[in-house]
Image (cartoon, rainbow, N blue to C red; front, side, top):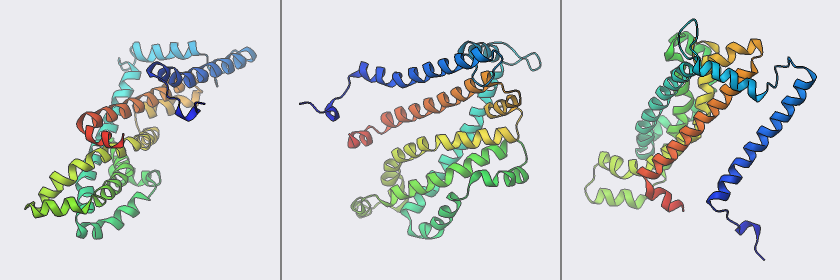
Length: 272
């Protein structure tokens, strides 16, 4: 008797099983929307799929009369720029401090408690402080992402480096490697796959911080647009924007996975 836990779907079956939940969600939404619209044709809570497609077509393909831009793509460009800057700076800070804290006992004793405390501070609670300190322009939005993401990346990377086999570090020093050489040639290559994994896990919080900052103070961006039209109950625009943000996060996650597999195939072979 073949047990269910031993049944592995083929490639086509995987695609079918992956698409099945999305198809069910779309079907349930269409049924719920049709039922509400049958009772009230002016209902805005659950707009029909056709109305969302029309709204998306208008914002993505037609130029705005006031700005001359395609609003959908302009908002996407602005938000991705902010997100990219915040994540890039966070990763750079994590690389420097994470390696130093994980490898150097003096740095660990000095900065580990600080990083533990900072990582527990709710970033949204200090958003008003960021607006006061850095103004309402781009810097405050990028800083919110950095403060929310960098400490967690630092702690995770430092933990990975501190768990490296001591035999590797001793052998490298026996062969004459300096502290910098051990850090760059032994610790860094093994820490990079973990850094990519941690970045993947922080994509969701990073988008959350971005949307929150844009909702409070911005004149463009995905979060700004969502909170701008909420007063009109424009669910035909809000739902496509939410779906688009989710798709962007999923694409970014997939790209990070592919990047890790191409640059560090040995790490994935070990897991397999």
